[in-house]
Length: 444
Image (cartoon, rainbow, N blue to C red):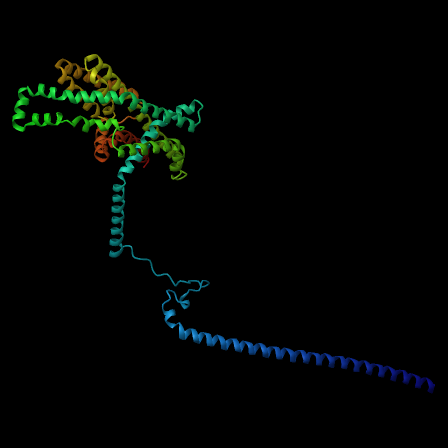
């Protein structure tokens, strides 16, 4: 028994010794780790001290730079348009400050300033329009001609021709007619006008034999002044020579004709795109109605232009045939062309042309003068009550009073061009008044 007790005690002592050794090893490892941590901490402390020293050096350098810049660039900083300290903070709620109250629109200064500014802008716009008035007239004439030729283009398109080729055909046709006129008719017209000028003194002598003309000449010396003008050596060349030899006028007229031709060609080819662009400016809810009204206005303007050409051609051809028969064949082409051109002018154009032909007829022979007066009196009735209504029935239908007022206003604004555009413009205005204003009044 005592031996077993000693063995047990020895085994326990061995176990305790082993535990003591393990504890000693653990303590040694902890000591090593602590020593390593202390060394790392010491290293970190040294690095921190070095970093702090570097930052202190940099701070000292920056302070020295700021102090140096402040000393050397004070004047330059004062000259800056926007100082760096005044730049707003973009992240703030109101980086540019709190907005002030709105301006009082009833204040005397605001009303006066706004009214004056508006008046100055309107005046500047009016002056600008006045300065470019001649260019706007050319553009307006080109648009008028393009809309007038558009029915011919669309007629060719209905026959299966594409628009660009239809425009080309119409352009070549117009150029062909102008070339034919220049080559075939201009020399004849010039000869006849020269003959008219040469015969004018004889007509003046015949007229001066009248008693009432003698009385008028004794008071105002009219016959002598007219005879001096007509018998001047350079009168015919000055009045008519250059007009027909260089292509119907000066370089300015040729340039304007070229501009009108180019603009007409452009407007004619791009007319659908121009229409769509203009109609797109209208609100979507009203665009369909605006399209219908715009197309109707263009149709009426085109019909009026085509109808005016037909009416003028009828007047010119009828006058030419009559003058060939009645005994004025020497001046038939020139006078017929004059009647046709003047017939384009509404209201007074046909009367002026007829008056000129009648006066020349009376100067040639009283019988011829009476015949011319009767012919044009009858033809005016036929044109006013038969030809014009049939030709213009599908394009314009403007009351007589409105026609007179429109022609007077258009003529006073733009001269002959305004008179030509007066009737289709009045027709468009009546259409818009009836379809827009009156219908709105009826539903209000």
